[in-house]
Length: 291
Ligand code: FAD
Image (spheres, rainbow, N blue to C red):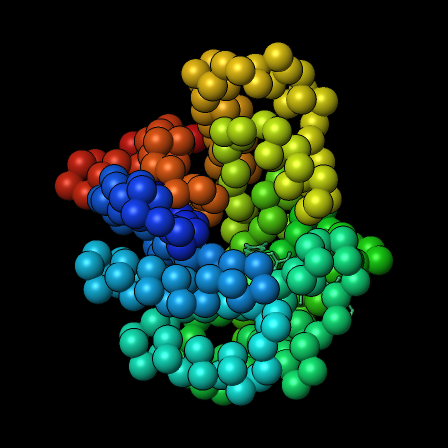
């Protein structure tokens, strides 16, 4: 699959040990020539400086194309515009524009910051005014929990596209049918930006279950059974995680998906193995057709 593209999401490290882990992952994944790597923005803007520093370090030390996540939470428009200008001046050309979750966590009602951007569509429009950024946005095959319906959610995606978004990256999902059906509905609504599947291999089932609950991601019964009784057996869990994620990616590839976004959690092992299974090889080695 020679036109395969991948991207990798990282989070800004909190300490020296996490810093090392992130850097060894970046080094391992870099030769796969990702279309971009992205760096998350902590809930409530809590990692503003760390996100900024991590983005700049990756750009300056690796030359990779980096997308900086940015949210609307707990900041005025002027404060967000300053962050955007600082990114533009530092050579960042890609933003993942997000509303963010309420300070009390997902599930609480969201109240925009007074004087802030109310949602991701407004943020995308604001970013467009600051610079000619490439703008990715979040999208939700199983609908955002705040949304009354999939149709309303797709309307919101349309508003983000009208505001300048050029790519949707999905919330993680394990039911490929939900993704494929969602893409059909998005196309039927006249939205033609790429809808890149976000792939989250299950390294820790307990935390994936918690996140899935919060995000409205369905955990298929088969998946739940596969991870039963493995809480104390990380080695077996890792093998099963790789198998499950490989099945998911290969099935999506068979359905024509050409770009995969991996939620790496700053680990390279599964993301690298999945890229290999999809036919991607490091720079200088021929790619193979895996689908
Ligand atoms: P929006 O698209 O603005 O809104 C989400 C939903 O809320 C809409 O679909 C709609 O249903 C409803 N809504 C919002 N405004 C309106 C309105 N005016 N009228 C009607 N309905 C409305 N969070 C972080 O804190 N940091 C990150 O780095 C981060 N990275 C992410 C990366 C990806 C790829 C994804 C999918 C999510 C990420 N998130 C991150 C989580 C994200 O912040 C949450 O999902 C948040 O609750 C919604 O963000 P959004 O940009 O999709 O919001």
